[in-house]
Length: 191
Image 1 (cartoon, helix red, strand yellow):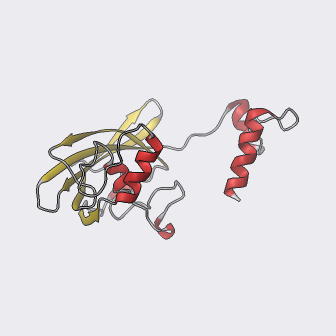
Image 2 (cartoon, rainbow, N blue to C red):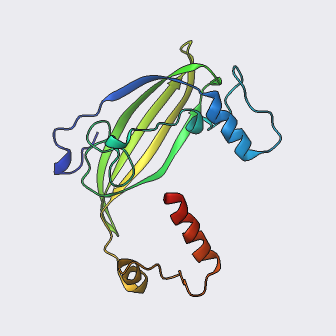
C-alpha cells in the first residue's frame, strides 16, 4: 500500500468486521420507491443486486460526522488532510445471493491510499474493499469503492461572488418561479 502525505503518518489500516441484519424495512421502502409492480422481497427472498446499499446502510451518530457530512477521518478512513471527498467509482462482484432477514458478516478494509497530482492540484485516492458473507459463511458479494480527496476550491467569477454575498445567482425573489419555490420549500424542510 502506498501511503500519502505527512498527515497520514502513524495511521495504519484496519479491518472492520460487523454482523448486520439485511433489514426488511429498507428493502420494502426501496421497492415502494421503484413502484414497478414486482413483489416486495420479503424475509427469506433473495436480495436484488445492489440493494445491499439500502438494506445495509450505515447511519453514524452525529458526534462522529465531520463538516463534509461524512464520518470523521482517522479511525477507519485515513486522516487525509484534503477537504473535498467524493465517490469516484467502484466494482461489485456477486458470488451468491444474500437473503432478506438474514444476518450477514461485513468485513471492510482500506486496500490502498495513493497520493497523486492532477490538473486541479493534489489529490488522494483511497480504495476500500468490503466483503459480505451469508450467515452460513457462503460468499455473497465483494465490493470495491474508490474515494477521491481533493484540495479546496477557491470560488471565482460572478456566481461565486453572489454566493459569498448570500444570494444564489439564479434565485430572483421578485420574479418568483420554480427556483424560488424550491428554495422556499427547502428552507421550510430544514426548519
